[in-house]
Image (cartoon, rainbow, N blue to C red; front, side):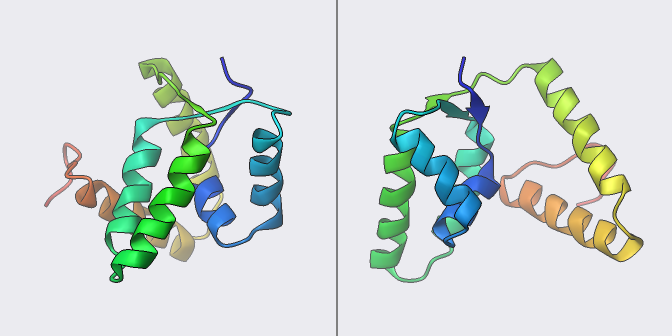
Length: 124
């Protein structure tokens, strides 16, 4: 089992030059730690990549992410892991003010729609 599970934020922050994310990826490259990713992270990243209008830039971003993924292992996420993540995320979202919470949920549902996923009880 890997030391860390990288979510989409790590990859996006790394791409944007964030020092913390660059440090994490640097440790991964230098074999100072191991990391894994889940399939949903791949889907989220490729949603973003697919929106890049220029083929050359799109391919450059794909190559950058794929290079990092070669150093990682896919994480099998169990139902219990997903539930725990939901609980932790729910607690975090619960601490947001009303405007930020609405914006987060709007973005969350948009991402689910882009993935072709609809949640029971949520109108299309």
